[in-house]
Amino acid sequence: MQQNYIGIEIGGTKLQIVVGDGAAKILERHRFTVDRVQGAEGIRKQIEETLGKIVPGVKPAAIGVGFGGPVDWKAGKICKSHQIEGWSEFDMVGWIKGLANVPVVVDNDANVAALGEALHGAGVGFNPAFYVTLGSGVGGGLVLNGSIYHGAKPGESEIGHVRLDRRGTILESRCSGWAVDARIRELKERHPESLLCKLTEGATGGEAKHLASALQQKDAVARKLLEKVTEDLAFGLSHVVHLFHPEVLVIGGGLSHVGEPLRAAVERALEYFIMGAFKPGPRILLAGLGEDAVPVGALELARQVK
Image (cartoon, rainbow, N blue to C red):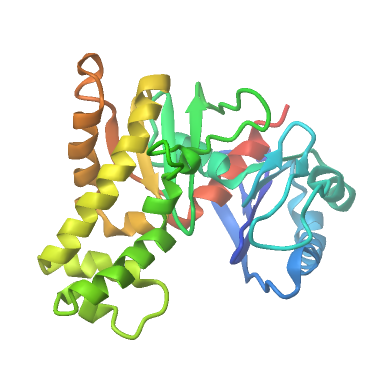
């Protein structure tokens, strides 16, 4: 008899609740836009209502949750959310158990996405697999022997907070979507004639989404910006290579939609930053699951519940 699982993704802008099978294949999806004004209470109401509708019919064996923020995964509690008020010290596992009466596990969303990509996405067949997500922030996760590597508490691979210099510049401040948006706004003042700057004219956010188009049209300013971003990213990832020796580095998140130019540029830059004994270095791949990385990873997390 097929066992079903439920996966939940709780982010700063979206909430996804999916039903999946034992192979972490999504069978049913419920997606919501997060209302920041309603805070955590509004998200909990959406989760409670949705679980109330689907749990009786699905009869899940377990529920996995990927949360957008620091998580005490052993205790099953949320440390805090940097985007939504009302999550600090919340007992996520205890609350959902009370709603569904099944085993529940919660982890940081980048860890969960890493699990999804390692076992069902671009990282299949590689061990260890490291995942980095370039979204509004920069997060990461390491999967070793098919499970999330946590290490000491809190157990998150905070690649975004790796320092690039002694002044305290962190990777997230250079390579996140918001950071690239800010770089493009600075370029508008110096290179208003460039195609990239013309494409983003009038925009006050989300400028990075035009980078791929400008690169496709061989805009020199866009190419130079990509080189700077990928050099910073490769420098940060070189520390991952030297410490954990992954067989693959998977790049996901909104900025990964730049596609092959981004992947290839990271691959070229990384070789310069790693020691000779580790060359040519790990495979560099673009994420395969897209926006399903966290929900698929949450299904796999639920499947692994002992």
